[in-house]
Image 1 (cartoon, rainbow, N blue to C red):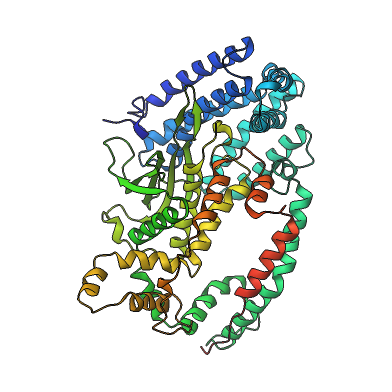
Image 2 (image 1 turned 90 degrees about the vertical axis):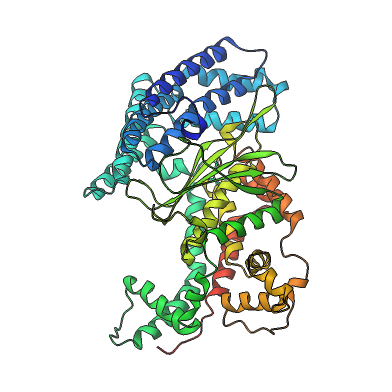
Length: 538
């Protein structure tokens, strides 16, 4: 019997308490090493060892708390999570540790490079956000407020009848905590170290997006108003609640009622994951392979295990997909980093473990490859797999900045990029490649009953029924639309995680320094293009 995620110490729910004791003991030993100094490891390396010891236990516990199908585990994980929260906040308000790390920037300067210095600054910022500079009584108040925030957040997630009251408490506690540590608001605190860097710049950017995209949105609403006027229950005003319904009517009239049904035959979970695997192989040279689950390795449910390997067959990490719909899941579709990449002593890599929660099927649906996935959820599969690949590609010496441990706005870029691949016409190439080597096409081609051109034409016309094209257009004979050299550049950017500032990483990728003006202009051009919808008859 394996323990959870292969950890032999996690074979039952009661074992979480023992692991907490072990983590606290290991942390105490690392703190002792930091205080006494080490010739073997720099202070920032010891700090990351401390962070890794806590995070690889606490992040696992958080995943179990949110997803495990056995209530005994979720109850014990909840207790464990509270203990880790208290441990983290007690360390983050440990004044002596803060000063030892701060002084190490000068004392150990000859042993530090830019990534070491940035990681030190990120650790120091966490200390300062936790009020390490405050008097004892106010530091204790910070720890109390952090506990209240964790408690109320958990209660809010359960979706009980008191959601508004819990949300009100959450906002108030966060505001108190931010003001206690010298910030004008919690929003000001949250925007430190992000891509735009301040509340004011983010505020201006978001309003800039709204103003730039409003004309395109109003053109789309005008089309929906036209649809509404043709309905059997016409209204003079368009309600927020009407948008989804009218959009569905528009799609049926514009593309035909059979369009979505014809896509269903392609949008199975097996095809989606095969297509994604094909995409990352062409972009990054990464190979994804399904592996069987060992007994006890995961909780009961419909779970897929994928191992990732690079082009040289080096093991990168493991991705688990929990695809089952069940009430015991505390969250919707999301990504959990159970363990981060990190360079350990002896130049050995700690490999990442990621869990994706996706509500795709019921427990009785055992043949997951044939499960149909609707368009929106299929797009979300690519989004969450984009997060997973960010973690897999992370190769940082510090787990504190590995993979998705970077500013949240930057962490969404790899996942949204995968959405673009899903929605772009070039994604049809991946589907074409999949079907071309599938169970039916080879036989038909061998018997001269199908050509690669006719297969590609059938896929494109089903994906984009209103796109005019010649049936004998052989786009599949052209060069691959997947640019490996650009993929390698983007893979390199993702490998840094949060080890360098997002603005620096994006400048290396794009070749210029990105501003909010660039972002607003790009979104304006995209929405203007997408809003060119024609009228339909209902």
